[in-house]
Length: 468
Ligand code: FAD
Image 1 (cartoon, protein in one colour):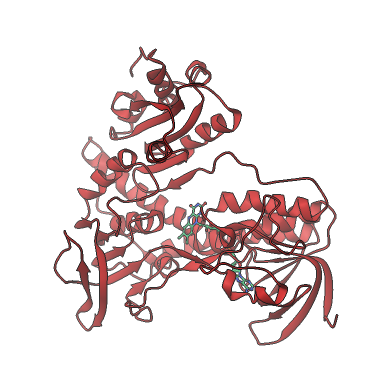
Image 2: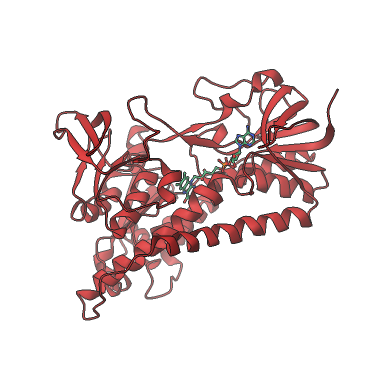
């Protein structure tokens, strides 16, 4: 058709899904153009998600640890926080990674085009650059990797600068005195962890009856207890019904059995979930079905209902996590390049990088019960881990679920410092079909937190003898 340029493969969106797909496709010989509205590669994850949040969480961790050690004979003064310098450092971490991606794209001869894309037809995309100039790009195949954006609430004055979403919260423009975190999921609690250590007094409000509703309650428990002692309030089973901007602050009203009185906060962080961007791309012009929530349906090859249109990452469904997007991106690129490939993961780990961290993978106990699985569990409390106590922490716990017929691992939940790193072993065990003896007989280095996984397997087998 009447395109300004034509390429073999367009990747729409340069997040973890998109750049992975683009690089893999180029390595497999396809001619690739990546289109993204941002002026840097990396999408939400690198620019305003995973990476900047982890940099700020590192700062929070250092502050928390100096406080903890102050009670154990090594005293520090109160931290002097220079927000400009902290922001510059965080932006530097992001810049190093997005700059690295730029170099990798160049090496592979992957071309990039900055602008907002929408479909004109099954084989054409219109890209509008920041200056308004448009380019019509024709393609043989396309991978949609447009990701997601924070959900906005109709009763919240989102234009008020005191109302934050994850993107503006990561800018750390200032440290509000009293911060209400609306939503007790992973993103809300990670940002709460950061702001609490920077000096905000935190209140969390969550609609469900537990924080991080996707994880087992017993695994979330130690986190709830830890922050319960440090934050002003945590309101569960509570709904925010109104946020009103006044000169004195944001006046927030609540509803629910245990709902607090109307209260005034210096800032409100809205972290109630993310919305896929599938509905914003005119995909119907390409004949691609998008569901009412904005998700694009795909098969195991990551193909939509239109065979030359693939979709990956947050835009295709939950869990909205970078590592899921990356794996889907590889599959889409391989299939687009004519290879036999399919998304066939047995499990996708989830991690909240809070203090303590909460991580889970495979079947949760809640899910095992709901599905009527014949399962048993082995739990190892970190109060019996020498390494955990040496870190000055004892609240952690490692729980591993096994199939009682085969002894094979079904899932795991871990809470404690570094739980996010530890969960990878359980993910590997699930992928490999390991049973309790495989895990229990694996010699873990002593003294590490990883031992708790072996100990949990031994606890399930009834062979646990060693503590500390
Ligand atoms: P995205 O990263 O969302 O990228 C999509 C890209 O597409 C964007 O750059 C966007 O500009 C572009 N785009 C969209 N529409 C168009 C259009 N029409 N035209 C042109 N370009 C377009 N996940 C983890 O696994 N671990 C974490 O620790 C983690 N922390 C997070 C912390 C925060 C604060 C947030 C917000 C998210 C976090 N996530 C984390 C989630 C993670 O960021 C996403 O799952 C991941 O970025 C999804 O990747 P993606 O490739 O689907 O798309």
